[in-house]
Each structure stands twice: as C-alpha cells, then as structure tokens.
Image (cartoon, rainbow, N blue to C red; front, side):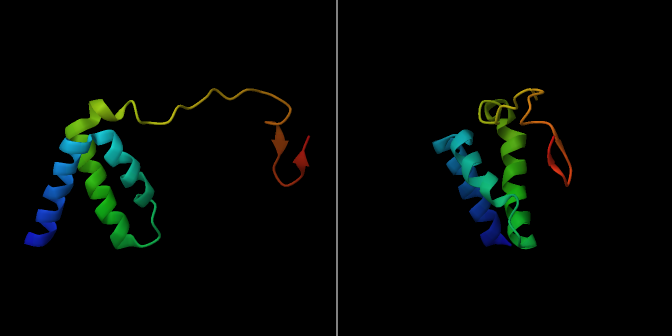
Length: 82
C-alpha cells in the first residue's frame, strides 16, 4: 500500500509539473482498458485530476458538434442509408 500511495503522489507531482491537460491525455487512454484492475487505477488518477484541477481540464475536453440533419446522417438501423 505504501508503494501505491508513493506512485500516486508521483502522478500528482506530474500534474503540477506537466499540467493537468498533458496528464489527462495519458489517463484517458486507460479509462476504458479491458482489465478491471488497470481501469481502477486510471479512474483513481482521473478522479484526482478532476478533484484538484477540474477548472483546467475544461480546455482539454473534446468539442461536441451539433447534429445536423444531412443525408449522410440519416439512416435506418439494419437497412443502410435512406
């Protein structure tokens, strides 16, 4: 347990030195890892990022465009395009 806490403290140090935006790019890759134990560690790091630097993470989140009703966006499930 003491080694795990030391590693998480080191990751917090990376957050201070590199910035939360850079660290978030590395953390997002592991949030959806197939192995449960790996995901748990990445979610723990993400929660620390969110708790201590949520104001700085807003600039890193992806933009979500409005959905436009074009011909390529309309489709019927299982039958291809309409």
